[in-house]
Image (cartoon, rainbow over all chains, first blue to last red):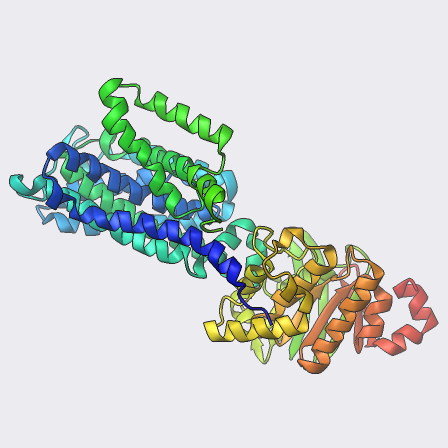
Length: 323
Length: 232
């Protein structure tokens, strides 16, 4: 009889306990506005929570075996959908968010079904090319009354609640994303996703519709990123090709996930500490050196801890968080 | 149980299977033998829906085979020649991956059953698949193929790379599965002697065509057939 070995359960639970701790930290962030109303602190944490969600969603795409640079595309779609719905159509901002989510999901399905089957590096290249295409298109949207220069979006909240409002919006998005991904990482779904990455033909022979699954992961993460793009753009006020379609919105989540540990739940969250370090330490001390410092950190991690920081910590003190 | 009629399969411009027809009745063990590049693996992959044929029909339990997902859920399972285990999964995790469509209680029941049939896997359940011996990996691949409550098991050259004693034990296990668990087996093999001793009927594939079919014992006892087609 194949029984679950008690020792094995204890070892595995150490990894799960780490993930639970990280999830609780994210959830506890919700009380921040009750602790402080300092706009700078709330803004830093707002950006932090947005990037935690983006890093987690990028990580699950990578977990299925796809290297994607598509986050910047869907972030931009979210931003420009808000511009169109609010400024051009005169509608409530929520319509901009919904339109961005719908458009991003649709584009992700089209891109997914056509390019994911190419696999490997070709999919990554496709997302890069699509990004530059979308960025270029964003400069030629006069026909729907979106000028190529900066578009101004109204704030979602009244001035006295702006900082805490955007913080709570970011926290809700991040918390929901974290809960969903935590449950994926600790249910049998993660077996399927990992197996798709490790041996797609093998899992296909077991009856899993792998293309459909990868496309759905890509599509649902696109919805999350688009929503972030919409909300963030309202908080940033200005939307332009540089802010809406910015490749850093793809690169940073990737960098944080690699730093913290890809293929894990806690790794991307931990990796976003780099962002906090940048906003609170590096940029104030050495402005404009941020990209160089990111680069140095990533190179160091790739050289000395290629699996990322969290797997190394868990290996040292416990067992693997996930597969 | 399984009926394949006038199957034609091509890879691009190159046709690999030509009007191949065969059938497998419930409870049988049927072997498909042939030399390298005869089309045996292509035939199995087409049967389970991994490759789309250019023409012909494949029916399993009375319904046409549409794609791999639906036919696996109906009870057909495929064990590829290179096993395609997940190396970073443990033995148990590989088995769980085979039973993804089952409910939790069904999965636990199947895991217990597999543990009884393959006690060596029960001993090694926490071991990474990559660290198993060749024979153990083959056992695991077969066991994983049984997880989704399989009724028809397709095996592609399961004896490749295995020592003779391991081959013997493997065929004994498959024979027991057929008798006791009522698993129907379609096996592709280059080890013709074992395939014919172990199966009830046999098809001989040559250059993508069925050139011979019949009861395995008769084929094994016919000296002309043995020499011309089976290399024995």
